[in-house]
Image 1 (tube, rainbow, N blue to C red):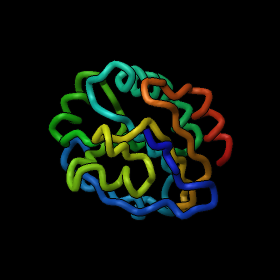
Image 2 (image 1 turned 180 degrees about the vertical axis):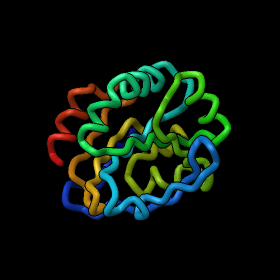
Image 3 (image 1 turned 90 degrees about the vertical axis):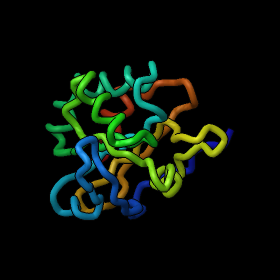
Image 4 (image 1 turned 120 degrees about the vertical axis):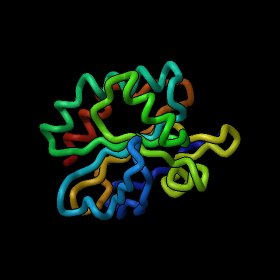
Length: 156
């Protein structure tokens, strides 16, 4: 299995436009000058580890808000699937569908697992100027610890 080669601190974050769980377009570069962003790639909605990770982020959303960071969670699921997932789990953050072309944004970020057909668990923290400040990933089947997010937020 390939290791993720994520954008490194100091790199300009690759731009993208994806649809959120409500079908609205979200463009990364449009957020420049407004907010920092945590891009959180996850394999699939409704799976155990992914649901657990996103619920932990939901329950700790205040640490992102306090740092002025908008959370963008991205998977290869459809917008319809992500909407039901967000409603069921009460996610009050943006879920984005990297559905078609399948996994294109995850590929640009070095987070797509070709042999699996979905993204690995990878996170890229981008400042308000669009520059990567931190990036990290975990092995398949592992959950990202909240402490890794805290460390990344401290890099802002």
